[in-house]
Amino acid sequence: MKKLLNTLYVTTENAYLALDGENAVVRAEDPESGESREIGRTPLHLLDGIVTFGYVGASPALLGKCAEYGKSVTFLTPSGRFLCRTVGKTHGSILVRREQYRWADDPERSLAIARRMIAAKLSGSAAVLRRAVSDHAGRIDGETVGAAEGQLRDFSRSAYRAENADSLRGLEGEGAQRYFSVFDELILQQKDAFGFDSRNRRPPLDPVNAMLSFGYSLMTSVCSAALETAGLDPYAGFFHTDRPGRASLALDLVEEFRAPFVDRFVLTLINKKVISESDFVRKENGAVLLKDDSRREFLSQWQKKKREEIVHPYLAEKTVWGMIPFLQARLLAKAIRGDIDDYPPFLWK
Image (cartoon, rainbow, N blue to C red; front, side):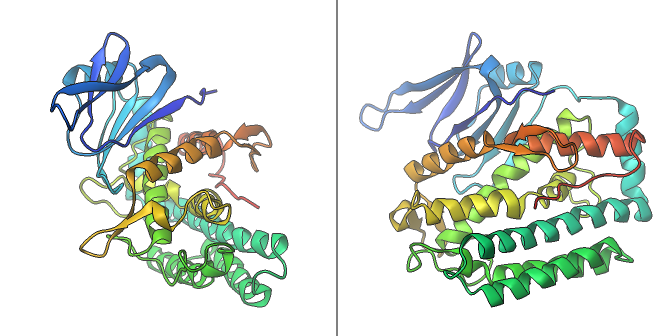
């Protein structure tokens, strides 16, 4: 079983990552003296990977050592948009990747996997709404949210029977629209600052969308690492189409975790007042982004969330949230190898 290690998040935009012995060292220019100074260091053996926000970069020595040890380095823009990711040697057998590519090129096999992933996404979205109605009766419009939950469950059942990729995409799109049409009901605190009208991105135009986009980017990085660890190619997907530079299979896998992990996490930050209106900055183009210190708090809470315990619905084993993408990637690899009859998606209830 893979051990859940820490991820080093470097949020200082002008930071440069270097190697000192067996340590990842973070350096940044002092604004007063203009000299480079060390602002942090972490032993590599304690890390699962590194995620850095900015454009300054990392030394070839550090990238080489991380590749040698099988630790990924992911580069994101200051706003959290994915740029690129470096990894070491390819994990697993070439045979499972060859079979993955055959499945990706086979419309029937691709559709079979995509159906399960999207059905799980729609079911997870419905479960988030059901939990909200159950936990906060009297504080939200239970009738409206309950109706949306029922529709999402209908969409989920229909997704299992989708005849082609286009109809599946239609169900996924309708489900997302219905889910987000009642998302504002789930925001119970700080309504003036965190009112939610609709999902928007590139750039996000309000604080809720800013946190959702940031969380989805982080989860995509996690899923890419999980698929690599399981010996799969994160760029050869079944639902998302091939596009140069797009980790299509990672985006497929993310669908299962959007509502139960990322959306609930964002709602918790708002409703428990961990994040407030003052934690955001608005850019000239209308984009709303987390401030540097607030991003660090977001990431700190994200790490805590990853360590919360959960019983895996298929394996019936106690684990932590941070391991769920890795377990799902392993189950997908087993399905592709033929070790199990079909891929069991993550069905959170």
